Length: 145
Image (cartoon, rainbow, N blue to C red; front, side, top):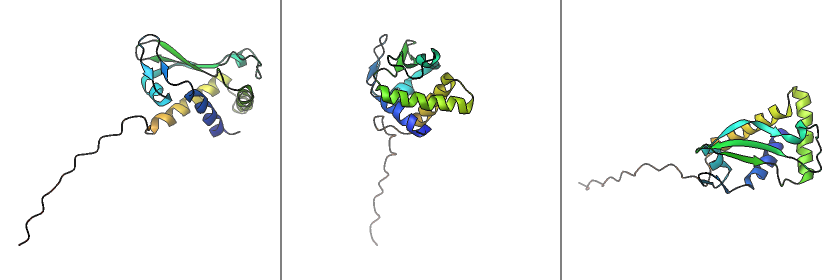
C-alpha cells in the first residue's frame, strides 16, 4: 500500500459520515468538501489505539480528528465503522511509515489529514456552485453596403 492508497481509503471512509450536522447551530455539511470549507481543524489527529500501544485492535477505540464549526462547536470524524481488515492494513502502513520517517503516528496522520484537506479544497467540488460565466456581449451585425 502506498500513501495515495491510504488517502483514498481514508477519504472514502470519511465521505460515509456525510451529511453531518452540527449539534449546536444545526448547520448541515452535505459532504467532506463542505465540511473542510466551513470548519477549522482542532489539534492533531488522535489514533487512540496506537497511543495505547495497540496497532491491531480487535475492539478499536478509533482514530479521530476534531474540527470547530463556524459557531465554535467541536465536531468529530472518526474511523468508527471502518472494516477491521482495512483498519489493520492502514495501521500496518502507518507503523512502517512512522519507523521510516522517525515520527509519531499522531504526526503522520495529521500530515495525511492536511494533505488530504489541501487536495480536496484545491479542486472544484461538483456539489458547489460553479463560478458565474461572464455575460455574453451580443453585437448586432452591421447592414451590408
